[in-house]
Amino acid sequence: MNRLERHTMRRRSALIGVSGVALALVLAACGGGDGSGKDSGGLTTVRYGSVGGMTDGPLYLAEELGYFKDAGIKVERTRFESGTQILAAMVGGSLDVAAVAVSAGLLNAIDGSDKFKFVADRQSQQGPRRFGEGFLASPRILDGVALDDPKALGQALKGKKVAITGKSTSTEFMVGELMKSYGIDNSQVDLVVLPFGSMAAALKSGAIDAGIVLEPFMSQILNAKTGVMISHLDGVISSGTQVPVTYSKAFASGDRQVAEGFMTAFLHGAQVMNDALGAKGTDREKVIDIIAKYSDLPADVIAQSDPPGIAPQAPLDISYMADFQEFLLAQGVMKKKVDIASAVDDSFAAAARKELGIGAQ
Image (cartoon, rainbow, N blue to C red; front, side, top):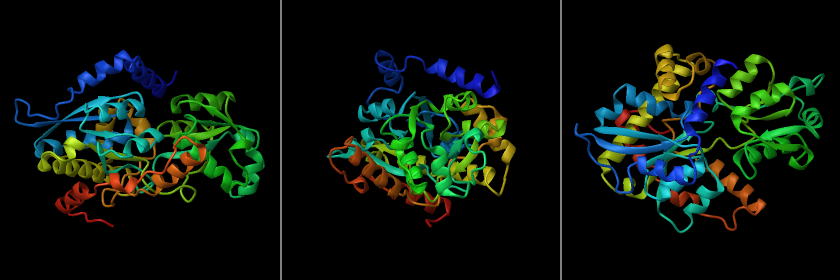
């Protein structure tokens, strides 16, 4: 068992049972439904939920570098096992802020509801090095195949086992868009449902032939040479936001200074992360060590991974959400189109960009 697998197993063990009755305990740990309050040090507690990992880098940096404290905020982070659980906590009023991937449940929750607002980008293709996700295939199916020949790739993938994280998920949507660009469709490949953390071993063993893989597992596969990068997905799917920073209704309509302060700290952290992990390389080792400390991932794994795409200077882009919604409607998972734009509020990020002097593009 390698270093990353040991860390992944430890994370999973810590999260076992975060469903059913155990989920109620998690929600209680989030502080109930009475909103944020001040601690003994005079800081306002903001309850934040996500699945954790490298994509929370901006929050880790904002905490470690004092940006949240400067804003008078203490962030209480809860790590969940799935987006479904995060959404349930948001709808139930147990979180102030969350990062939850776009899904049918999230989009359906918008309809006729003002329980939350999408306020910023947390993962997209807007960052300095795409967004830390790609389509990889085993070298054994690529012998003699020109990787810049879409038709040849389509023929190589026909009938092969392609991993997705679930039916009617963003990974199934992405694979479908890729297959279209290769001249085939999802009915011509064998879709296999696997969590991201199991894909490296499955590619190596031959249990799958290809799949959409997220960092840090993507770099693990590439470094082990058990998979070849076929597409970074840019130019195939929209560059819009896949995971929005989401404010609850109570938080968005409550203390404006706190809501803007949280966003300013978050975008400042995103700026630092991009400068460190992108082309500039500013304080790279220091930033990697901070993210490793909070994410429970080895520093060397973070160092070799593509960072998640977060563009602090850019307003949230709903183009990906709109495309994904069309996919869900076609599948019958959603019964009617919802107005995604009605759930977007860029005012907090706009105020943060002004405060930071980074300006919208």
